[in-house]
Length: 252
Ligand code: PEP
Image (cartoon, rainbow, N blue to C red; front, side, top):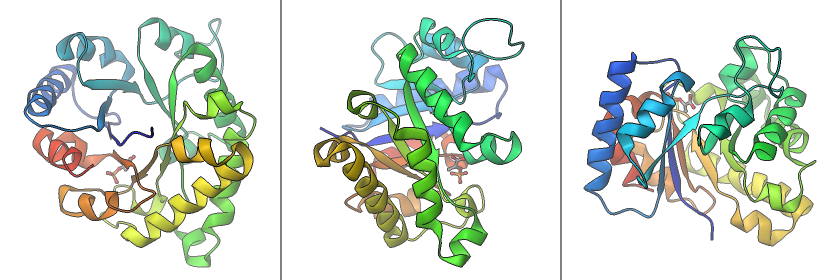
């Protein structure tokens, strides 16, 4: 059964004290609502273990790293390998975020390696894809997203594919206040699901959660999450305020 998921991407925001306070607040508010949705907090790697402690054993709020190394353990100064994250029992990792692609030069090929490293280590990747504004203007967004999805995911086995969460995040909507319309999101999500169906079969495609990301707020989440192929969201700015984030969770 595919899950609805609402994942916060805190990026490089918050001091440790502020991050722990936010996690505590999310935990408290999450305990006051009834939801089937998986709630995930994507924090700076350094903060993940103390956040985990705040959330407690068996918490319904899970945690995610925002990146992992393309390499294993060894002489890779400054990197955190997937098996190191897994050894700290971090369940999820966000990979291929547009900020990693544009600011840190991550290509589809690098992301492919990271997805594989993550899966081999036992992590669940939240794989991000999405087109920049010029591509949307040119109307070629499906071609670009197809390349991103095919390159990163088509070398996986069926069993591996079922562990991947896909996040469609049009770059022009990230942190800009512009949001794809619910129909634009649905069209792309249905397209991505059709790509997965062609390669891995309809059953696998049906199982995969595809999240929408890009200026989601509590005021637009219900409409977007209400579309048949949208299984929740990856939330940036709005995840930094606990009650706004939980109001978004309520829409999933
Ligand atoms: C993101 O960075 O993944 C994101 C969706 O950001 P925002 O919600 O702020 O647009």
